[in-house]
Image 1 (spheres, one colour):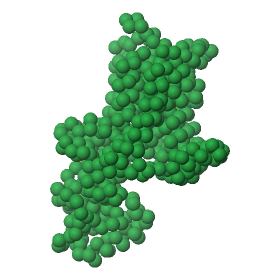
Image 2: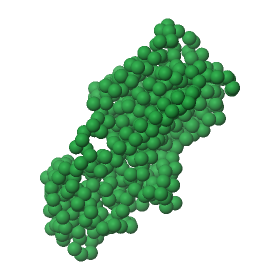
Image 3: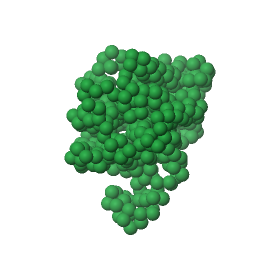
Image 4: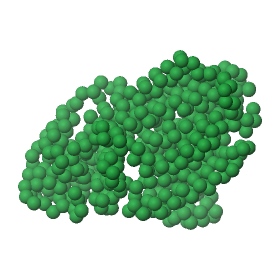
Length: 497
């Protein structure tokens, strides 16, 4: 099958599609999606209840969306104060993610970090629906059900659920809509989906530009493809170099390519004069190659058979060429959620291209294999935590943590340990307990184990001793958790509410 034909097949309006939807198909898809949303919700809320979420990043987003709900800029004092931007810092100066404003109405119903976790679970699960439609149109309903299951169990999605909340929650759904509407030949919807993606994060322009590169090879789509390439690249530059600084951030704050050059010009010079250094950076450290292999492995290596995979290349290069921010290139965290649907869609398209050689059995066999890979990965990633019965009951330290946060009164300004901050964020004004004293009337510390941003427990204990020596009184101390209250007037960081 020719490459152009495989990607551009469009069903005429009113013509029944192969494997057309039946009531049973709809029920099956609804069950897959609802089950996934329930599992994701259970996983993230259990982690929150077990004090495994963090101020970085759950409280940052909680404060930002609450500000949106109050018709203000998305101010996150926890981010602004800890990172030196000031208490009035808008998260639009950190990442250009205006799409988060869509979650504000949910806070009018239920104000707190749990709302974000449930919303994320629903958004990630919902991506299975357009991915199912995309797969059904290419490979039939049987394969579509299996691919939807494989997506919901896939480690990039599961690890996104396990690490608090992030704007990445929107990316799979919007990407799946973009690809499915392209497959259906709906140009207007494609443009709208691309514009929505640009609101997710500043580097989504790279994903749109990558998609535009794919369209350049397809008759009838080349003009739009060219617009996506130019517009996507220009948008990423505009968002990172103009809009983010306009809202108080720094254009170089996330510069991570020091091994290749001090700026984009330096990286370009390195690429021209020493291209092998650039290639070597893709595998340094080697875990980058492990992550890439795991990504392609979710499709049994079928994704590289499709030009759709080109769409993910700019975002992968952004991460894998970095020499700073190690979280970017490991299998954990949320970064792989931005491209997981592209990988699955590329795998579907790759199998469709092989169908003429392998016959009609190939899609079902491949889809079964993909589900098998997803199931085999479960014990090695965070979804396995759901099978741990200890996750559903508190141990002594978790009970002490709950008692510690209960000491802090509602509405108080509190410096809280990273793992305790989410439990206070819905009812208090939370700062991160770090190496700098902010003068908050309340401090909730953890000296039982090392926590972000400290380097060791000794440093944490020293901070508590300094606070006690400066006039704070211990109101609670149990199993490594210490609650301190100011006994007199404190000097707080200027500008704190």
